[in-house]
Image (cartoon, rainbow, N blue to C red; front, top):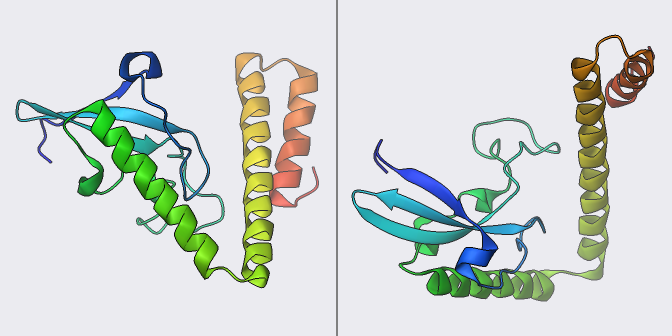
Length: 158
C-alpha cells in the first residue's frame, strides 16, 4: 500500500449485501473500500479494531481481531464479490473449528470467550464512567462511580 491509500467504510444501504459476523471473534462485519493508485477494491472487515483485552500488546494482535484488516485475498472488485468471499471464508472457518474441536476444547473456548466478553464489558463501563467525569468534573456521583470502576478494573480498593 502506498501513502495515497484511502479507506472508506460503505454503509449497508449502499452495498446491499448480507454480511456474516466475524468468524473469529463474532463482532459485526463491515464493508470497506480501498482506493489506491486510481483503483478501488472492496473488502469485508471485522469491526473489532480495539486492542484485545486478553492479549499483550506485542505489535501483532494489538490492532484487535486479525480480520480487522484482512489479508489481500479478501479484496475484490465489487461489493458482491467481497461479500461472497467474506461469507464463504466465514463458513469455512466455522466448519474447520467445528471439525477440529473436542467437547473439552469447546468448553475451554466458551470459558475464554466468556472471560473476554466480561473484560470487554468492564472496559466499556469504565470508559463510559470516565467520559461522564470528563464531561462534568464536578459530578460527584460520576467521580464515585469512576473510583469504584477503577478499583474493580485494577483490583485496588479506592
